Image (cartoon, rainbow, N blue to C red; front, side, top):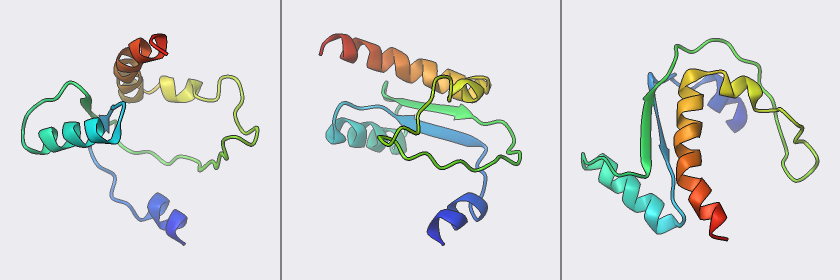
Length: 98
């Protein structure tokens, strides 16, 4: 029942927020700073397009559910693409360091 209500029972918000962090402490610090009114560099906000009816898909990662191009349609959404590009810019230097 929980999964059903998260899909059909939620209010669709006009904006979204993403927090990037290499640790729980950094993520928490970014979110805390945002709630206090500052604009930390690891927090991204964006306006979302009006909600339209979408199909539900369940993917169980680690069990072969991934397939090439599965996120292509999401990248066509301007708000998702902007958030993806910003998070990618934050994460790419971290990946090169490992």
